[in-house]
Amino acid sequence: MKSSNGTFFLKLKKYKTLLLMLTPAIIFFIVFSYLPMFGVVIAFQRYTFDGGIFHSPWIGLENFKFLFMAGDILSVTRNTLLYNVLFIIVNNVLEITCAIVLAELSNKYFKRISQSMMFLPYFISWVVVGAFTYNVLNYESGAINTLLKSMNLEAFDFYNKPGIWILIIVLVCAWKSFGYGTIIYLSAVMGIDGEMYDAAEIDGANIFQRIRRITLPSLVPTVVILVLLSMGNIFRGDFSMFYQVTGNNPMLYSSTDVIDTYVTRSLMTSPEFGMTAAAGLYQSVLCFAIIMAFNYLVKKYDKDYSLF
Image (cartoon, rainbow, N blue to C red; front, side):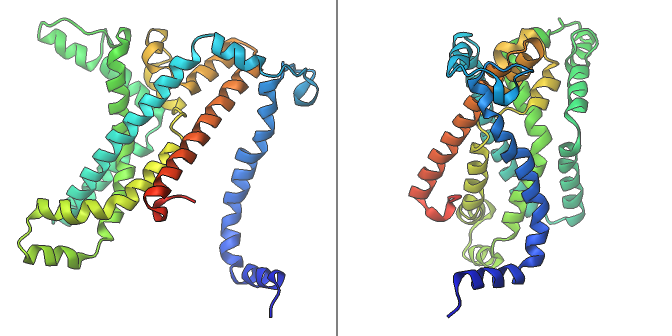
């Protein structure tokens, strides 16, 4: 009977090529995800450059106390949560809809062109998207206001109206990212057994009935997994998106400021590394709690859909 060590080394030898291919990803996460975790101690210190991580004075939870007393962390937490909930709902609905439409198209050339056109914005930098957004919404010479002025209508000052930016941010995020998600859902749709569609068509089911009874139920595992993965970042804002699209405009902070932009701006305006580290730790703990809770609920519903 082989020992456990012998079995381990046999598997190591058998899958050595696959493990070797996995090595760059392992190194990446060790260097950029696990090693930086030692910096968490800064959240409990009054960090100084001469003292560093190992010799800066410990102050316990004072950084967290100051963070919450400042009064901004709760509002940016709310913004981060609400934006990510909207992103998950809007993006998934658009992605599923587009994937089903593409799957039902019979013209393969139009289908390929459509996929390429939808996927293209995903590769555009947020800097370019921010510049494009500014040129469309600018009060003086933006495309929308230029059109309004040509129609003898009053120009609209987008950059002085925080409320409307909730819609703008959601639309910009959807425009840039839904093409990538559409490809994922399209792959799932194409993997559905075609015999089920043929049988449903023979039984007299129209296209909408086939989508409702076959396509959508078959996509549930994919939807659950993607939403579950998104939950791990539900308290993390896309810094590049919020910073570049809004132009770091103080007039819009009430509706567009998220934890990531708040922490970055705090570092740029104040040397309080302990407070910003406390904000980052607070953000990570919330993300961890949410994904654990959501994974638990998914496991209760169907353990095959859970991550672990």
